[in-house]
Length: 222
Image 1 (cartoon, rainbow, N blue to C red):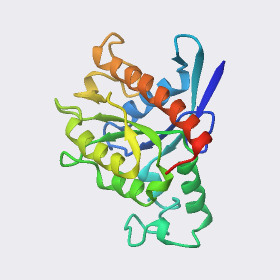
Image 2: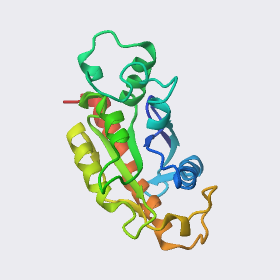
Image 3: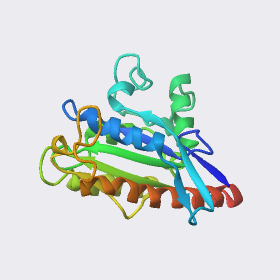
Image 4: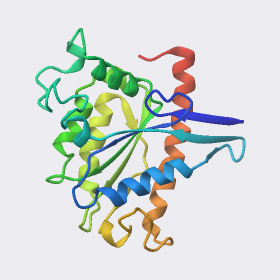
């Protein structure tokens, strides 16, 4: 049996990735995560089911930048959230539907002043909890220092709890990321134990995404 989980309107494919780029570290982590998702075939119940990912990347740098979906709508200054606006511009409505149709959310982020980067919080906060409700989320953080963004992950987890996309217990933290990944996202040392964190996180994310998807389809959300 093959189960595909959707990311953001990706129903039957699993992950929605919301990424806030770090000017220096962005490419390596982004390439590593997207490559992992593209090539991954998760397993449920041993070999009873295979999970594949169809994912959409939402990058605040692009979305709030010139020509981005939220550039003219708010310019990253969320005076009025989308759920308080009746007639949304087509590109904003499309982005809202992409998030609402996702089966799960995977957040990849550096840390900013030891908390969630403002642009990432603003991107997610533009859309109400109904877009995220009854779905799981996973959190990947990274930094050039020794903590790997772990402190930021705590504030991201709090935000996800409030939005209703509950974080799985496994985190992925990449400290001194330039010593772990090449610029193209390939591992410097494929045996580095830090690289084992993402597959463990995805195991939990996939299991919960399938379970919550089934529950939503049977009983709706609350």
